[in-house]
Length: 499
Picture 1 (cartoon, rainbow, N blue to C red):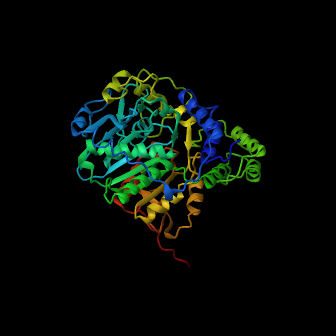
Picture 2 (cartoon, rainbow, N blue to C red):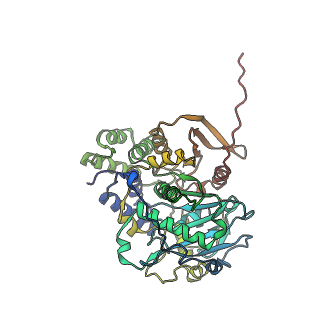
Picture 3 (cartoon, rainbow, N blue to C red):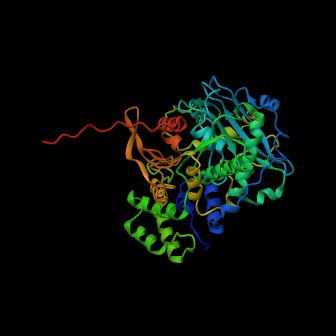
């Protein structure tokens, strides 16, 4: 078996375990991810010679302010009334290849002229920021159980920013390429280049955001997407002596950061939460070496198989959440609550594949020969460029005075809080503000520690892998403080008196 079990090995583990429990398109993503992990290798990247290609030939030639008006979404089928403008459409990232990315953009509910621009990226690799980020996490709407109508997300992030969602790379969601070879090669560097080209062209279409403070957010494998894109932006700003994009900071949730610590932390988390036996963890520690040069031994493979069996009946994305047992749409919408419905994937899938919805979104204009899917098995299977760590990029951002926040939903076992803590510990950072709780509405929202160099780590209490889905109020508080550059609120304990 190939070297390494990237965090995503942990991911693979929990996803493969999860295979028996999940259904439909979710099952396909998991199987594709398993193949990815068996067949691909992480790589060490010498970033000193990494020069992202600037798509100057594409910039300004394909985008115009006129196209912005064509992208206005007047009304989505089944949506409630709103007081903000939303847009959807395509931006070409490579004219010669016919490669175009789909975006969905929602302006802020209030103060859109002064609030920053925030890009959201989902991970995978190969998962849709429209289907997850926009429709199930931080966007303005969520889908009812009938798959036809929407209700308002009162904790949407466009209370704090103008929010842009991007489906990338080509082959994810509604994004496409007319060049067949584009669908045979996927990776971190090429995705960062295309995402950068998208941003330059999108800013031509929306020039009022050219000098606006810009932040990048995301989760899971966006622990690679976000830093790689930020690195590309910094590179071009410095090497052209021009601020093409006014990047101010990044924030990533339950992030894939560093393969060795991510993988070890995942297994330690499982045992510490009584999900696998002490014996199983002992076997993993004895036989599995997650270091960059190691190979997976047959004994390690066996130990991971036992772990799969022990975990086969829970949702690894939230170890305390129910699983979806009936994915059928309902004739009438279920009564909503702000606790995540475990069948939300199915409602979103049904909604985004309705022809009238695609027409309203200005999506699927080329009439793709397949359904919109939340994740692309093809992209996951063919992902080949995947560095072993992005810690070096986090250090670069800190050296360049960017704001860096990493957060973790504390009931996620796919990329758990233990993994993130191990990865941050590997950076040997100096603590500025020691571990303490942070508060939302006089309740503990989680815990936080702040480090020298403008890096903040925060947990979100009771949140799974998709933090804004499970704890939307706490997630909105988190992003608001991040964008405002203010520390998470804290009430110090009363002074102790001793008798």
